[in-house]
Length: 579
Image 1: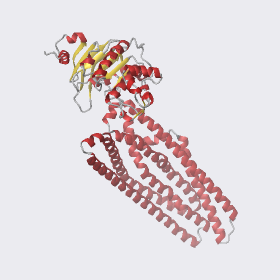
Image 2 (image 1 turned 60 degrees about the horizontal axis):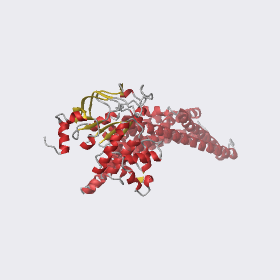
Image 3 (image 1 turned 135 degrees about the vertical axis):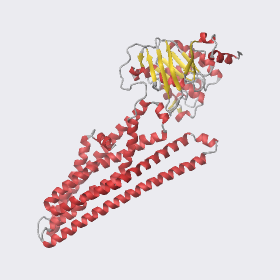
Image 4 (image 1 turned 60 degrees about the vertical axis):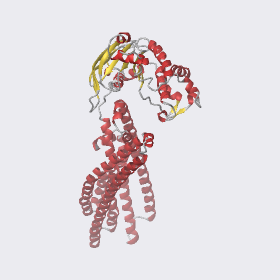
């Protein structure tokens, strides 16, 4: 995982190099600053005039200014680099989730996904902007100081060279435990986020069944588990900081003892001894900072594992998002394309139900109604048709071309899809309908709403078409949400309309009006819809009867109505005719 994150840093080499060079240069300037100060102290207390006070002050001001500028450049470049990588990573994750489709989102915990995409990406910033640069600085900066120290005092340089690996050893020893603790902490946070989101989504149901207090206690328990996991990780981080501080202090003490003994014997000058003593704590500082940043960035590594798990998940949609070329056939609203299911099967993960060996064709311009008991596979068939699911076996052909070879942009332009539970976004009524055709004028939208029989409802709202709808359309009834989605379908400029239970939430009067509009729509476009109500089914010239994922009957409306079978039984039951 660290290699993948490091590879992302290579995409901004100049910023990363600037971060490292700024930190290393700042350390070199610090060394010369300490050397000048030590020389001045020797001249002031031992009477040996080496440098003047004015020079020391001027040099110190210049050195401090340069170090401040380098520190700012180091921080700015690191943050800019991390911000760019975060933006790119978040875009990649969101794009990949969109490509995976709604089936992937439905199989995951939404709260956990949100935590990963937002908080997880933010945690990666610490790893990229803090830990990785500090990792290189903990190598380059001490080496630069050692080069100067070996030149001034080889013995002290050798002592530092021997003690430095001890800090690295302790960091590795404690870091292994930290990684497992951080992973448990992140999993607990993901569990808390997912559970909290689910509880909020189902708050109304919990209130009705008097389970809200019980769920509050469960959230409190998970929150307490997260607090305990966090405190254990922090305790380990404090222990690591204590060990690193103790080791660096002991190393500084050893250097100080050897310097004092050789200074008494006259084997080293006072200025050189003081320079080494002042620089020694700065030699250990990059290692101490690395230990601190390691603990802070470890959560980012755990979050990155989850992010890359999503990014590495193979696309299961039937459409290749990289395809940009339109299919080699022309389609208009009056001459749509043919659809063929060639031995198509689909099975949900860990489930037996699905679709089994579907074989049928729909000629251009024909419309089809799909009927069958709940769980027969009607919605699954429609999801396969619009490319939201990929067949487990078989091929779907549009005008004889496999759907996976067709441009995703073209297919989305051709298909207007109304799901069983249409989603309403936060925003105005106008914006929610204009999703189907962003270039639509107000007149186009009003015309579509009249066809969907929701225009009068919208006009009666406080601000008409500018009325703000809440998230999920909670200020609309189920039937109003359904008609809003139907207005999108009428507004869409594609040649195919796919409807999943379009009249499930409508009253009888509105359903009758909509049936007439469906007949008018079938004159302009190809319409494929699933329905339970026979009145709606009878609008289509072709009918398919599904049962347990198999096609029981398929053919013209008039043929199936006169043929003894499941469709005839449903039709007789609808008309009140006994068999």
